[in-house]
Length: 89
Image: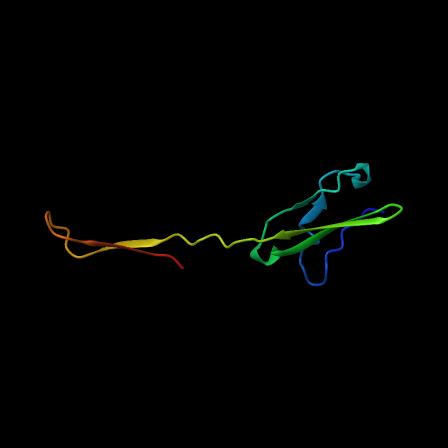
C-alpha cells in the first residue's frame, strides 16, 4: 500500500503528493508544493517487495533574498567621488 509518512509536525500533509496516481507502477516520485525553508531535511524513499531498499535525498532550501535598498552617499557632482550603498536583510 503506497503511502507517505510525513513525520511529526512537518506541515507537509497538504503540500506533498505522489506524481503518479499509482506509485506501484515503478514511479514513486513525490511533488512538494509551496516549498518552505523549513522543508530542509533528509527525505527517504523506501521500497518493499521481497526485500527493502532505501534511498535518502538531502534537500536544502535556501531563503530568497530580500529586495535590496540602495542609495547614494555624497553629492553627485561631475569629477567627484560618490558611494553607492546597497543593503539587504
